[in-house]
Image 1 (cartoon, rainbow, N blue to C red):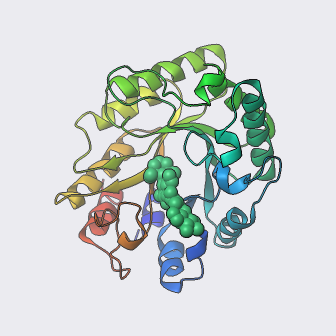
Image 2: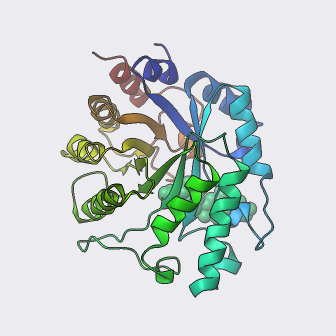
Length: 300
Ligand code: G3I
């Protein structure tokens, strides 16, 4: 293929990007988006603070703009994210206990129902595990409602949109380490008990080459019977082009790796200011990392 999306599709994968609704009026941005990418994740527009700024009052304007764009251009959608300890609306930040628990699940069921049939995969829960060597859950007001909040969220999302794949998504879980093993054990437990989970997202915000056990880590999750997805890829550093190629090769080597999403289009679109971690420069030109990514997608 001659584009990221077409080349990924030839390998049975997708190639996506995060999109900001406010940039859909920029023709340089949409030209690249619609030429190269066949999966879209809203960068911020589907988060809790954006979709339910006031309790019980849902606002979908910006997210719907992205969904409409995707539908008009034959792109699929990853939904991001139903529950996350960050970007909680202020009203939820000050809640706890059973009141927060019911507000959380009302949020999950209402937003998932609004987008029913339009989402390929939802990040149902984002970043619920702690960094460091403990392998346990991250403290948050969500976690303090009870350790079962994640499985209740997955069951609630399944009921609201049975056709969407339901993912758990996190960072620093890209190699085999205490944090990724904590997630692994949760997924294994969910599969054993019939809690609905279909996929695990590996954000892959990298500072150079992926960990040497990156592919092995993807594979051990795939062996649990879930799809794996690279969900927020961006890479800084001087070996950027090689690092991107290595990520692509790892995904292609794991049959249940469904696709790769980069976290923005041009370097100027990145949340990592000054690090230039994306595939297009700030003028929209293809970088060496673009070419290495495309070549890896087209490889044997
Ligand atoms: O839109 C408001 C604007 O009105 C206001 O004037 C301005 C002042 O701060 O803020 C703007 O909102 C910002 C928003 O991005 C849109 O640009 C928020 O402050 C800012 O916090 C927010 O950052 C986003 C961040 O998630 C929130 O934590 C980034 O764009 C987004 O790339 C980043 O994405 C996360 C993933 O969701 C989860 N994984 C990690 C990843 C990187 O942090």
